[in-house]
Figure 1: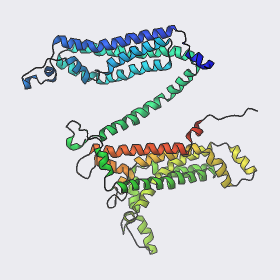
Figure 2: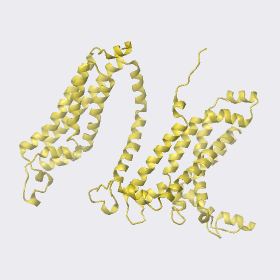
Figure 3: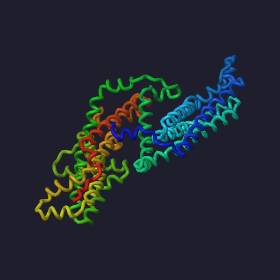
Figure 4: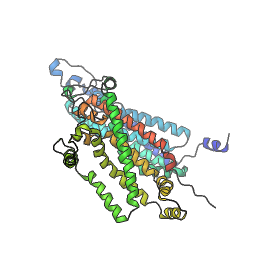
Length: 475
């Protein structure tokens, strides 16, 4: 056995902060269990019936003697979470004491066991009060919920105290905690605004929820919505439209044209470049309805439309350009908006490249194309990854301009993309009612497609190489 493994196997000496933390943990665990069973015992002693609690005694003419304390706290979300948190906390304490030392995972475990049930208690406290008032046991419920809150706070305090000795024994832990604290707010936003909505979306997609049965309890139908989705006659056409829209708009405008404009506007005088970049921002800052009305006026049916009025005197036959070439205008309308975003990111990245690189390239006789190929493009790989990934996900979920310009037509699903179909199925269906469950299935599949494409981009652009620390050779 190596010396490192031998040292790792030796229990570290106990410290005062560890004992203090575990005293809080033991007290919190015991208090959590007692706080749950106290209202339960009080309800049993009072002999409150289940039918009295639910208000059904008068309708049925009978009463069932049962423990409404369990019913009360089960309805409020405390029946399992609070006592389980207390039991797990006690087991965690015994395990840590038996090993003779405390690790960071022990401390984080206690904090999580206190934080998650605490949030559940606060969110369900109103329901617990309402049920308690109906059962005539306000005092018992108030004492139980208050005790549970104090117990869970004690578990969080115990975890915080246990972090102190763990940080003293592990010098790198302090830096790790600092990094996690820095990323914590962003991580919380991702969980609240992406992860949890994705879970809710998947949950709804497994039901038949719609406006026709909104007042009824949810009926789980498994993966029936997904079976219906993939067996849809127009599923291949909508999927093809989506990839066509994303690939063409992304390649031609959002990345391609944006990169060309960024390079051109950085190789001209600074004031002129700033002026042209400002012009390209106009489509993005223009209200969507006004912007699309401009495109519709441009390609209006004959004899109207700016294109017809310009080409008519030249002998060109007037046409309804939007009806005959819908994809051209869909891509142009979205592309002019998307190009401005990449233009700003790429311009900033190019401006941040040290000028010495370009000077040295000119001294070596490099042409403009060689400078762009060997200096500019390699040094803006990170902005390229960001813009490509972000704009791909943005295009996958965008349908606003298509809805206003063509509404998925002309005809049947001619320019309808996946996000627009999900919107119509959930909020504007062809069958006269909002099919939220079916629309959620379309939306969740779109989430999976976005995640897969993001992983592919990270692998292709070698994300790990981009974020690793630079290595400096010491001579």
